[in-house]
Amino acid sequence: MKMLITGARGQVGRALLHSLAIHGEVVAATRDGSVDNVTLPTTALDLGRPAALADILTRIDPDVIINAAAYTAVDRAESEPELAHCVNAEAVGALGRWAADAGVPVVHYSTDYVFPGQGDCPLRESDPTGPRSVYGHSKLAGEAALRESDADHLILRTAWVYDAQGKNFLRTMLRLGAERDRLTVVDDQHGTPTSANLIATATAHVLQHWLAADTATRHAQSGVYHLVAGGRTTWCGFARAIMDRAVQVGLLARAPQVEPITTTDFPTPARRPAWSVLDTTRIRETFDIELPAWEVGLDAVIAELTGAR
Ligand SMILES: NC(=O)c1ccc[n+]([C@@H]2O[C@H](COP(=O)([O-])OP(=O)(O)OC[C@H]3O[C@@H](n4cnc5c(N)ncnc54)[C@H](OP(=O)(O)O)[C@@H]3O)[C@@H](O)[C@H]2O)c1
Image (cartoon, rainbow, N blue to C red; front, side, top):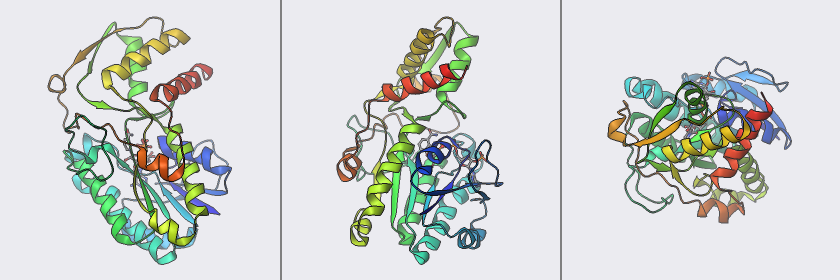
């Protein structure tokens, strides 16, 4: 089984290299074909050039595609809508059309930012979408493009992704926590921090079940699933949890004061949903998987950072 993982230098892509390598042959794809510290086969694949994808995919000849590449710069997307749409939607459609012709299943990731952000109940896959940002629109268009391609697919919507490496909220908080005595963090956006490692291990589990199913079942199981850790918090709650643990293990000498602010106190180019807590019943019941509380993933990443010092 040859598994093509795109975005192999990203948070989720890197975690997937580890979780999927034990299940078969992995080919790691990045924009320029280079990935640090891996002994796996690598290839160049640029989602910014959708017209070139079919030839590249034919050459690689994968048995399954896991698309963890995306234009993820949420604020920058407001001023680069064409590029965001190209990478997150057009390229996903091209990838799906190649996969449909070749009979190759596709796993793709999407986001809580496809939702408008109202409400106070965990959001189900069937709840109405309504993105408020260019990034959210581009990711929703990517979902539609993959669905319309007719490839067998799983679209895994995740949220608030962080890892011990990469550019993310946890690493920003640890840096600011070391520099400042006081931080203000948005406390009126609700969601679930989800570690890249949880996404990768859950993807490996789901993929095993899905690919082992007969063709009709695999086709019937195609669609959108919410994949996030259990529980919920706010960015401010997440920041406080990060600081508490970082002080406990000695990553920070002392905890800065973390004070809550509102979204209007912290304007950003892109609007973000106030409520993006996702209901994960569908993925848990379909693929018989447990999704631990978000604090479990945070403890693991803090332990990884502590060990790496
Ligand atoms: N991060 C989050 O909080 C979050 C939340 C919800 C959903 N998601 C979704 O989860 C998935 C994985 O996200 P992540 O957090 O792992 O993102 P990430 O760390 O930003 O990684 C994305 C990867 O995509 C690659 N990429 C960007 N443009 C590309 C192009 N034109 N061609 C090929 N590769 C390209 C990037 O390559 P370079 O390293 O070369 O830039 C990067 O390695 C994405 O679908 C994202 O939309 C993420």
